[in-house]
Image 1: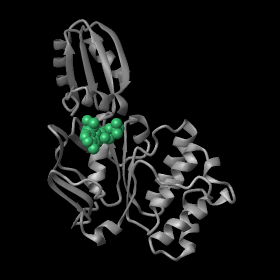
Image 2: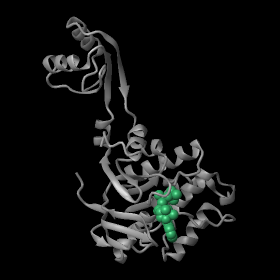
Image 3: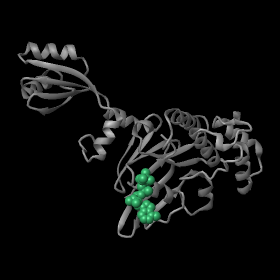
Image 4: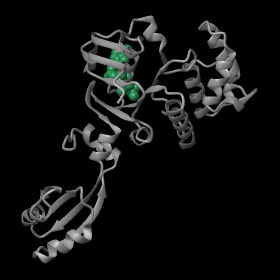
Length: 306
Ligand SMILES: Nc1ncnc2c1ncn2[C@@H]1O[C@H](COP(=O)(O)OP(=O)(O)OP(=O)(O)O)[C@@H](O)[C@H]1O
C-alpha cells in the first residue's frame, strides 16, 4: 500500500463571519488514489479544495502537499487545478489555448501540449474553436489546461457538474486514464454520488463542514455487499436457529418478524433449514445496498452503516 500522502489536512477550518464553512477537517489523500469528495451543496467542498490549492487561507489548521506545507512552491508545482472556470478563450482552438497558457507558465515544450491533448482525447479537434465544443469537451479541455507542467496531483471541483450523460462519460473515462496510465492522483468533488462511485478508489464524505467519513473503495464494497432479507413468524427464534446452524454468519434482527442475513446468500438452504425447524418463512429475498443509498443514509445522519 502506498503510504505517501498527496494531501493531508490537520484540523483544517475556515470561518466566514460567524459560520464555519469547514470545521476541523482531517483529510488524507494517498498518492495514486482517485479521492471522491462528496457532500451536498454548501457542505464545504469548494472551500476545502480552494484551501488545498492555496487559493483560500485557512482560519485554523494545516495542509501538506506531498509532505510539504501548501505555501511551498515545490509542493504547489506538483498540483494542477480546475476550480470554477477554466479561463478558456472561446475564439481559440484547444491547442492554441494550451500553448498560450504554457507560455504564461514559462513552458516551451510544445510536444507535451500534444501529449496532453491526446491523453484527454482532444487531439482530433484541429481548427475547431472552443465555443463550438460540447460541455464535456470544454471540461476535458479545462482538465488538459490543469495538466500543463505535468503535475502529480489534480484537484478538480465538480468537473462533471452540468454535463449531459455523454459528457460525464467522456470526463470519467479521461480521469480513469489519467490515473491508471499517467499515474496522476486525483482529488475530485461532486454531489453526484452514483457518478463518483464509478471512478473513486477512496471517498471522503463531508457534511456541514465536517468530514464524517473517509473510506476506501474496498471497505465500502464490503459494507455494501449482498444480504438476504427474511420475513418470518418469529425473528428471535429464527436468530437462535441461525446461530446454532451457521455460527459464522452475521445477521441482524430488524423487527419482530424481520432479519437481515449477511455473508450467506444461499436462500434455498436457509429457508429449508428454517422450515424444517418449524419457522414460517413468509419471504426470503436477496438485497444489495447500493453506494448511493449508503451515502444518502450517512448524509441524512443515519449512521447505522458507518
Ligand atoms: N467567500 C465566502 N464568503 C462567505 N461565505 C462563504 C464563502 N464561500 C463559501 N461560503 C459559505 O461556506 C459554506 C460552504 O460553501 P462551499 O462553496 O465550500 O460548499 P460546497 O460544498 O462547495 O457547495 P457547492 O457545491 O454549492 O459549491 C456555504 O454556506 C457558503 O455559503
